[in-house]
Length: 282
Ligand SMILES: Nc1ncnc2c1ncn2[C@@H]1O[C@H](COP(=O)(O)OP(=O)(O)OP(=O)(O)O)[C@@H](O)[C@H]1O
Image (tube, rainbow, N blue to C red; front, side, top):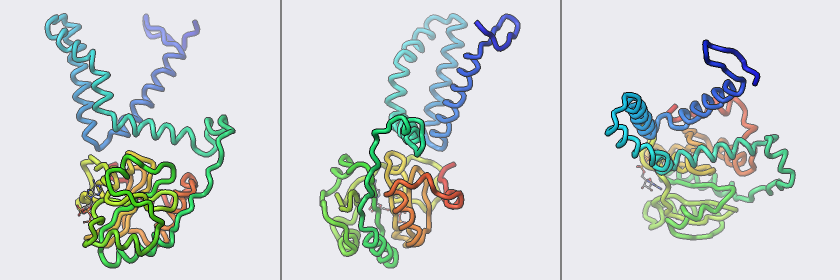
């Protein structure tokens, strides 16, 4: 066996160094993922308990070690249940990174067909958004390029209607029975209205963000979607994507971001674009 170096009786192999590096990267990614969420506290609680268990076991305190041991036995299962959202997010990020343009996996999967451009009536969306923003009418629109988001669409009223400016304005009119919640747009259609979105549990959000923004952020954390928010209070238009909110955007900026999202050109976003985005809770 080839050793990298020796510290006293401890022989360190190259594999050990790689192992430590990989664990460090993994722990850093987990920390980045959980940063700012309540899950961090649960994780710290778990780790503290595990440390106490190690100490108790080393001190041979049989009774306490037995009780904590039982708890640790189901710990992995409990962690999977408690961190299900975070694990999902982590796998999503992993999948997304591996499938990036020129990614290793993508070059291996040569049969992967190039997706056709999504045909969406963006002019209607932009015109409706300008009108809603101008009249301070709150709105929440979820754009999906890969799935029809059946689970979320089922929480509202199914429409399956072609997108038009008038329809969007009518839905979000505050006297309309459909105005509450979000609309889901997929493959050029308004799939459903009055949909319930998952609310983000981030703690350090700006004070002006109420439930509408939290729901948009939560949806962008849980799924590969882009969410357009129109504030009822200020009329401002914002976009939530990948756990970030870009606030106070103009109509051309919204169109650009929607175009980029729908046509999978996001990786080509310029550095300036990236800097402009306000990373919430980081
Ligand atoms: N989980 C949810 N899913 C979908 N829509 C939601 C959800 N929670 C709240 N909303 C929508 O947000 C509206 C409440 O918005 P609220 O005023 O609390 O948010 P806000 O972020 O301060 O936005 P605004 O700037 O428009 O006031 C609700 O009437 C509803 O339409």
